[in-house]
Image (cartoon, rainbow, N blue to C red; front, side, top):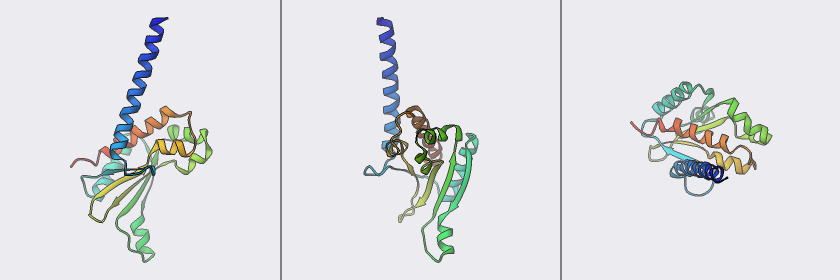
Length: 163
């Protein structure tokens, strides 16, 4: 009985430690406020950041759906917009689990990662925090999957944080 309780406590502590680690990585990258936006500053120019991210997505075997050059779309409409490119990608076996929990979660899947340049010329990778998405859609039965999604996007964006 004591060994069983010890194992349960150890498992709980390990899960708690993992959750705190994931939260510390995300909170270090989060913008001010609780708007669900995570931002990571790039150490490389926009084109290289896009190239690195797309290469990492491919290397991980993740499905790449689309690259949308929002600044080009704006220019075609006669509107000036600083560089802004939206990358859409995902892992259907993982992402569709959120949609099976709440079909409205399809609004947030597949993953959307925005690369944008600010007024200072800094490049940022921006996405919606997965725990925020879980709260938005009241999904409580996919904790491990949301943690996995957070780890994956954090790993992908880490490819642009060093020269």
